[in-house]
Image (tube, rainbow, N blue to C red; front, side, top):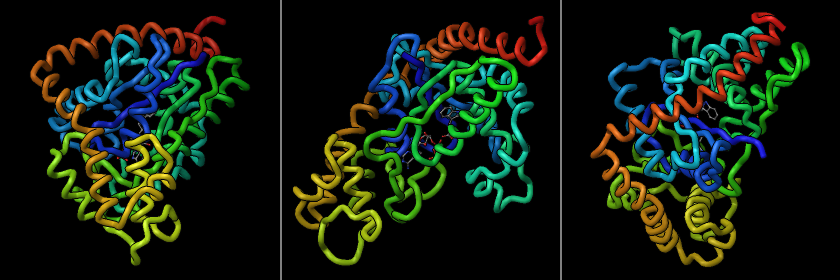
Length: 325
Ligand code: ADP
Ligand code: TRP
């Protein structure tokens, strides 16, 4: 059985899209020494950033992930920059990646579009992400749909490296949740719910129940009044149904069948979202009273992670010509 890994970049605030797209698929199947969860703090340096905010959010993200069910007894739980092998492997993989491959990444194009000061690290970030995955010989990467292209790049790099230099890496694949691989923004259902954009359209895991209810009740719907699951033509209602179905574990079409009108649906969504996030928020409050214990957990995680990561880097260095064969 292969390893599973997923990471979260400490920028903005974790939301329900992150939860259903990546957190839940990982925490639902934690297997000792096979599951790895990490805060990808190095990735937060790819865009303009405030050092104090990165420091604060790294601890906050670690705390939210623990509150959401990451279990250090069953998963290796770490902060990326505590394990220097991530950047070490990054460089080796850069030497096996084409400029054209990273330049065509959709996220790079989007994030570099409005900036005349694009950091080189924004361009090479998918290679660091590949290093994150390949370092632990992970076969499965639970991420939301927006990360598909990056996991495919990690696959391509692994295959190319293995072919050129000998088999070092497990070739990873993306795993998607059955529903909610892409939750949309409540105020603009054509855009992805995201950490860094719209406050009103994003259901944050630490929002109070009142705030969550208000955001859901104000969600943009579609013309007409029928509650049908039709993402193409009725994106607002389809998104609410996706959220409801993800919370209750049913199919969006079944959720549609048992809903009355729009107001009824919104009430059901608000109740379901609050029921899902309330335990996380409470646990977060408890854990944040003892930040030292969270720091201790990630320190232990880094020690465990380095045992695996060190072996991979040694194998990669040997294969690529930096160590005796
Ligand atoms: P954001 O795009 O909000 O800044 P990240 O890109 O850091 O979030 O995503 C962290 C994880 O959550 C990734 O696996 C990503 O695919 C997943 N994810 C992000 N937004 C959504 C969404 N709206 N629906 C489903 N999964 C999502
Ligand atoms: N790039 C991912 C994001 O922004 C986070 C991430 C970094 C990640 N490294 C990873 C996810 C490795 C899965 C595996 O959402």
